[in-house]
Length: 634
Image (cartoon, rainbow, N blue to C red):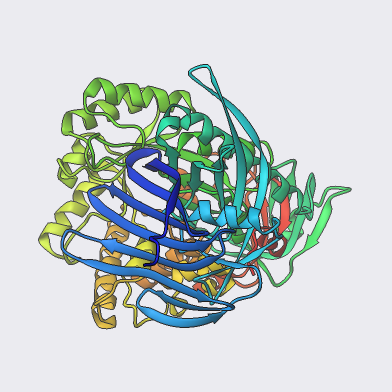
């Protein structure tokens, strides 16, 4: 009678899962040896704003972590379905992912990993890398058909927990998702902590249960590592010019709404515009670096008024695309504050304005800072103000009394208030509570209906600014029968792993006609808002970095804005909404030199907004293509 295989349990651990810094669930895993092979099982169960995710994975591997089979199941209260199943035999892998089955030929150094979750896939990935001699790169499935992964051991961190020294090896992983992930192993090669930005999405983090008191320190270590990466990335780009610069011969769109001026000259000295006008009327200073821009168009740097800059790559990508100011609408403090400060000190990135996210607490809350009482709301405002935030961003679970306390304290300290309309308030009640701006577009109905007309009149009367994120709505809501590249041609330039994420977006089960009708209704409301004089500013949320700003502007023209007004929504109107119009947003004497040079005139064809060739941020001029390469865009 054959003997029963004996299993040796090497690791049993529980990880605490955090989403945007807020504890949302657990991942329990076991790593066991069985007759010379390894079995890694994981159970990930968390809830994000009331939406439950439950994944169970089983990975069969050889003793050196070479994969044999990976299966990830998605569980709901009533169903169980295969999320990913990969079977490896020699150099062939059968991959079942997203309902499709493919057979992939693998190179000699290859393993398996299916995105961020379950987290413990990264434990197997790094231990495979260590067991195979730390290769410079390795292939993984699923991918396109494979993706390339790069891993580095970045250092060793010693932390104190109850007077006990905790020594952790820190690793950087690049290529599982877009951007860099951080991972720590202890001396027994157990997973201690993990942090990812989700490939352009929001921050997803894990820390072993007993190390939870070290979570903030681990977050800070990850941020420090990323800022060092940003510094290296910034040094890899050589500016075209600094100091005294003359931009000569281009058509000028100054952002004020005045007609374009042909054959213009703009003089910049140490980051400020000192002269602007017709070439014949402007004297070029002796010793200036003269850039001949005949045939091109100059306009103010673009703004993204709704971003979540969770990874350093957003900085160079924004600069390359012509975005010179961005408002972050919710982030983790240990990352976004050093990110903002690094850009202020010369790293590649847009001027970063911060809105402090606050929600109402409880199991379905969003973000790490919550307020369930007016006093807690006022304390949160003071904390954000002291950290240099410009705004407060309200989220869905805040109660009316808390909203009133937050808005009063924010206004008292010179901050404005934006965000979602809390579910306990109507839109009109939110305006009466003191909200200055509204994120997304919570106006329902048809443009011209009595209800929509009343709401628009109230928004106009309150001077409310609307940040509609129409491009994000289009990306999430389009029919899967319509290719993303049909409305977002920039997808062809993305790093492969980001392109894979973006091209999978859309809404299943909706036909193209219905999706187009819904988008047309949104654009009709935008046109009605604009016609009524309600300020509309360009924001993108978690869309295609840089390119979604272009798409937002194009959608405004599709809605019926003039090209000039659509451009101003992403320049001077945004600057005015942030009370910075005295310093930036238009190309006028005395203002900060945030400038975009286009290869073609967007007033003639709004898609020409995509033809960015040079970008000046705070007086330093870059060739856009050089910055794109630094961010690994094609």
